[in-house]
Length: 288
Image 1 (tube, one colour):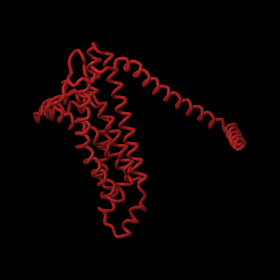
Image 2: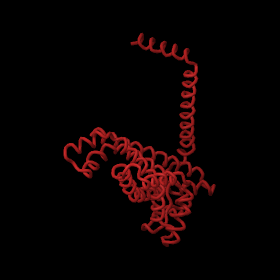
Image 3: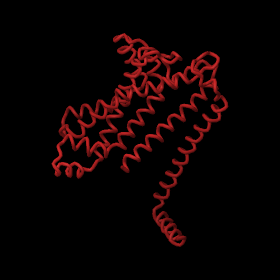
């Protein structure tokens, strides 16, 4: 085994000697990977070092006060906001992608316009969505600063992301799956929902995970729509802050910077937990 590895290594070295450009590209790739890993580890380590010493039981008190600056209401608001935004955006995005990938005719001008529009919306800064939500949901519809206004604003913001990732996941399903289903006598609708969609679930989940991460980490859009009240809302028309807004507010005030870092630690672990759970579910579904 060692001899085989040595022979393989010597062959690679000879190949790199014959092509110095390939060796240079290999060094650049390794260097870029090392810089990326070091940056990520440094960022995570900095947050942990700054935030862990300030983690305490009073940060998880049920009610927020100026003394305990509890993050528990913001954590509950984050869960509510994420659930509402995904409840609105996920069905719309997935079914829109199903139509674009499975039912729309190829070369359709309207489909191309929809795709270009969704890609354009993906690049718009979040503060623009916040201003739109402020003008439309908060002011025009008179919802005020509320969880519902924030959820609808976030749903509009993540809708292009879910549409695009779902469409790409559907396109990655081999056409032989569809042809085999048609050959067995299944209709279009049955083929899409029993064959194509289950095969594309890992890709669809990846889009939902990315959308969830954007919801959890969003600040600008929610300040203009959901507000910054640090309490658990009584209903969907009440104002409330999420963890990201809570962290921003604490750090901008300058009075509880340590607690802001502690909130960042909790936010980091929540994102890791969501990604791990979603990856586990996708793996179980793909095996099944």
